Amino acid sequence: MYLHVGNELNIRVKDIVGIFDADSATVSSVTKKYLSAANEKKLVSFASEELPKSFILYKNRKKDRFEICFSQLSTQALLGRVGSYGNFS
Image (tube, rainbow, N blue to C red; front, side):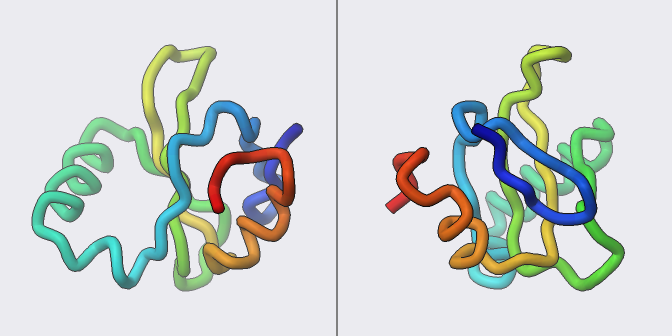
């Protein structure tokens, strides 16, 4: 099962570590440092050019590393798309 996160970008549900609200999660200095370091290492992608509402931390199996994808969709919308396929509730 794949989660469509926007603009033809799909992430395999079993590779998702977490789905986070972009506003509330980025308040923490630790999260800000993590996202900044990931961005410098080119591990961050954007599903859209719109203002992101959430981000997904997932394992890229092809490159054997964790990556981040920002999405214009809310965490509630993404969790609704996952439905009963994930353990995110």
